[in-house]
Image (tube, rainbow, N blue to C red; front, top):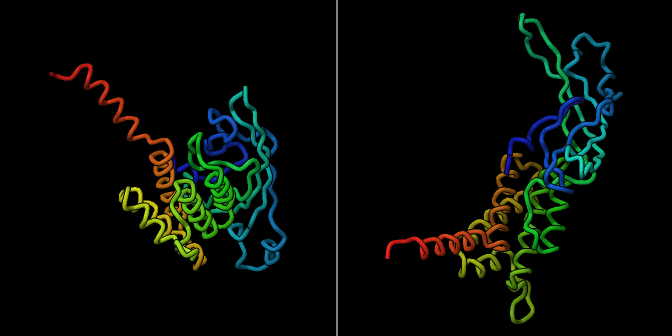
Amino acid sequence: MQKEIWKSSIGDEKCPPWPCPSCGAGVVTIEPGSFKHAPTKASLADSDEDWWGPENVVHSFVAWGKCSNASCAEGFSLSGTGSVEVGPDEQGSPEYQDYFELRYCHPSLRLIDLPKQCPQGVSDSLAYAFALYWVDRPATAGRIRVAVERLLDHLGVPSKTTNGGYLSLDKRIDAFSKGDPVIGAHLMALKWLGNVGSHTDYVSTDDLLDAFEILEHVLGEVIDKKSASIAKLAASITAKYGKP
């Protein structure tokens, strides 16, 4: 997972190399001339005041993106917000530069790779998480927690007691951990972050990206069984060429 690209700003001529969700081979690019932005009326309301400066401007933008892979050429509707930051130029004089942050993209981008056999319930929950990442970080953490629930459903971990009572996610993860304590610990970490997202107004970007990376690893191990597959390949080579 390339975490830094999901924290990068967007511009009228540049775009972070966000992977195309349609083909996976290309990246999103900005169509020349399509990036349009304008300051909001509210941010200009006090422009006559002595204290007001360009750094008080808030922008809205829209743009059209396109996959760099010519055989795909998927189109993307992009929009978001912007601000003006002040910094020194080469001569030390104030220099103003616009920065823009994505808030909406359709089709939605995928922050992590999903296994081809990813359970539908998990992929559906993550589709919401990917879309919410740009606008509501706590809600994103909550959808990651739901993805954990759906993964446990797929793995056959009971969600109810023998008497029909509700089993908490903690208890479901504990049940799973008896067979795989390492992955169980990863799932518990995701659950804790999901709890924070449900009860607070703030979840950091770095914590969310860490959670996505953990979940990508978990899905690779549980669905694609990557470690088991590599171990099998290593055993095969050892059997062929290892010392008797």
